[in-house]
Every structure is written in structure tokens, then in C-alpha cells.
Amino acid sequence: MSKKRGTGMACFFYGTGYGNGFPDVSTANVEIHDDGSATVHTGAVDCGQGSNTVLAQIAAEELGIPYNWVTVVSADTDTTPDAGTTAATRQTYASGNAVQAACRQARETLFEYTRTILGVNTIAGLVARDGVIYVKGYPEKHITYPEAAARARLAGYRLVGQGTFVTHTTAVDRETGQGAPYWPYAFGTQIAEVEVDTETGEVRVLKLVAAHDVGRAVNRQGVEGQIAGGISQGVGMALMEKVHLKEGRIINNSFSTYLIPTTLDMPEVQPLIVESYEPTGPYGAKGVGEPATIPTVPAIINAIYDAIGVRITELPATPEKILAALRAKEGERQ
Image 1 (cartoon, helix red, strand yellow):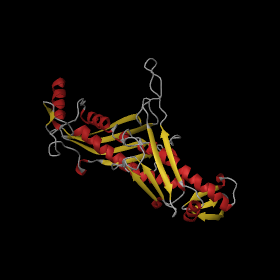
Image 2 (spheres, rainbow, N blue to C red):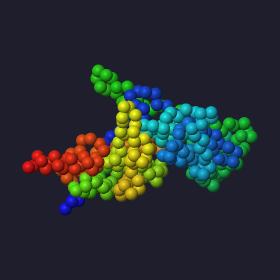
Image 3 (cartoon, one colour):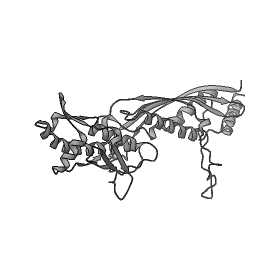
Image 4 (cartoon, rainbow, N blue to C red):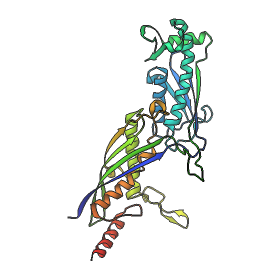
């Protein structure tokens, strides 16, 4: 039988953010308008991972208004405050915290005015949901966000907020090895099932089960997309992607020569979202971007070993390397 199947597993932990005491800071601004809507300004770059969506959800939750009332203006160096790079799986955590703090400040200013209208002593006696501000325990006594915001502005209140979040890390002591270089950490496990053709050396990844601790999933569909995207990159790294150099120049500098996975190369992906609640994150959230790629390669390489008993130690695991390893194994056996 030329095709053999195997299963492999890999586990990881990964520190998010810049780490090792390097300043990891994000700032966001928010303004509540007369119609009850809000605009968030953040320097966070959404390059497809969905940070604009997540930051809008966090703002809507904190302000107590519908999601579609929030507009996110992002990555405009002329109008938005610095939020750091979209790297290190940090934007949901760092900018999410900054947006939450900015929205809390703006909401509390609005509540400070609204409490006088609704007749409560402190803003702690108010709560907002779906664009309506209520008296706690007495929902019949309420005012809509648009009415409250418009009246507050006419009364001289400026419904703006700014939030800055600094991650809590310290540099590692070089002598003792002690410190808190990253916070928070992501954890996860992936299990890969592969099929190896021993005649051609071709490897097909059939299925990947990916369990990831994300703190709390602000947007479950977004988390699942991040996991699938990370796995696709891991499949490419494991089986086909390699930069070829000649005299310091890349010679496979197009997608006709540098191969990446297509939809036909993707396995069945079963994401398992583990919600542990990160107390320092916005509503318990932390990152999942880069962590989704980390265990894919070792899980696939372990599955190849389980299938045919050879250990591939140089990536990518091309058909040529698979066949060479099988020939070497056969020679050793003889």
C-alpha cells in the first residue's frame, strides 16, 4: 500500500506583545455625537485580521449602544493616536484596552449629566444598553442616548474620552533569568492527520484540530478565521514554502515559483475555542493571530513521522525529502 496515514500533535505557549520590558503602549480616542453614535480614533492597522470590527464591538459594549452606531477611524497618521504596530498579536489586547478606557471616560461624562435628569445621586446608579440609559433596578425610568447626548452637549458637556494602555511587562534579569517578559500568554494544541504517498513522497494534510486559549472570544467568527488563516500559513511552511537565494538575491520572487497553499491544499479545520478569561484584557480577551501558526508545522511533521517512521528535520517537507528519507531508512534496515 503506497499511502499511509499518521497523526501528530504539538502544544505551545506564546507571549504576546513586544515583550521584555520594551514599551508596549496603545492610545485611543472616542467621541459621542448628538445622535447617540460614537466615533473611535485608533492608530491600530486592520490589515484583514478584523481589529476594526473587534474595537467597534468593545466600544459598543462599553458605551451601551448598538454595534452599528460605532464608526472606527483607524491607521490615519494625521488624525489617529499612536496604537503601536499590528504585530505580536497585540491589537485586540492593547488597543482593545485603550478603546475600552476611552469609552468609559466618555460614558461617565455623559452619565454625570444624565444622572441629574434621572434623579440619581451618582453615575453608579445608571446603566446603558442598546442605546438607552436606565436607572439601575428601575428600567422604567430612562432616557435615550440621542436625547441624553444632545442635551448634555447643549449644557456644555464635551463627550470625549481618551484611553492609554501600557502592557505590564518587565525586562528579564540577565543574571537571575527572572522577570515578566510577556503578558499575557497564549496557549494551544493542534492535532494533524496526514496521508503520505510512499511512492511519490506527496503529503496531504487531511484534518487539523486546533484548540486555542483566547481568553475570551470577542468575535467568534473572527477567531475561527484567524485560526484557519494561521493554519494555512503553517501548512505552507511545513510542505512547500521556501525562499531560494542566489548571490544574495531571491530567485523565486513570484507566486509562480514561490508556492503557497491554495484552497485545494487546505485540510479540514476544526477550531476549538477555549475561553479562560484574561483578567487584564478587554472583557477578558487576548490575542490569537500568530499563535494559530506556531503549532501547525510540528504537528504536521510529527504526523509524517507517525505515518512512515522518518523524521524530517529541514523545512519544507517536500516529496524529494520524503523519498530521500525513506530510501535512507530502507538502507539502514537492510
